[in-house]
Image (cartoon, rainbow, N blue to C red; front, side, top):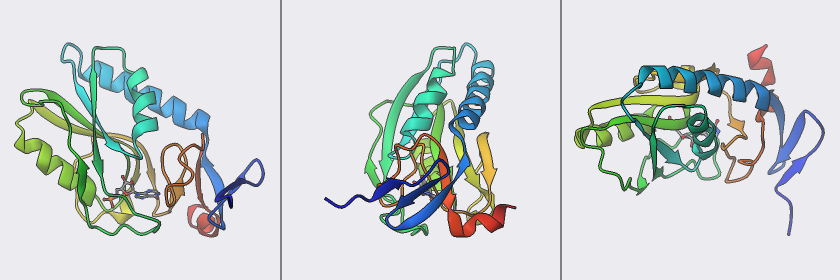
Length: 194
Ligand code: IMP
């Protein structure tokens, strides 16, 4: 079977024939996630929040974030349709899996890997608010703030990034690259971040 994912060197991977450069290292991701976990622990002391992970992309960030939280908390997952093999958000958001938990009167934190146009988060927040949570907040590892089409409240943000396509640490390019420990960006967009 043809490989779709190739580690080229220390700084570069090739996915589906395109070169990606290392952008955020595993160490950087780990220390920022710890800070967010500490902040959530302080903000939700005595409240037992429920973290709702958005599949597939958020599962790695969520698992690290949850282990950085040192108060009682619960977890559940929902799944939305993804980009497919494209690098541009289709804006067509569909729910593929609902949460199982009853979130009425619960303190809910929606956990995303990345907020791009904001359409997915907007869709999730309107669905969640209908269930009557005691509070509803959001955490995202990455925010492409220049790509925002819908303004959504983002309380816990790991990194604001420019409008670049990224892979790794849960994020995929056509389902490939989620297992990379670091986050990479398309090499031909590197000049945009100098
Ligand atoms: P939005 O609805 O446009 O905000 O897109 C949110 C979803 O698109 C995220 O949960 C990701 O699954 C996906 N996504 C957005 N940008 C990227 C990217 O740069 N790489 C991989 N997936 C992305």
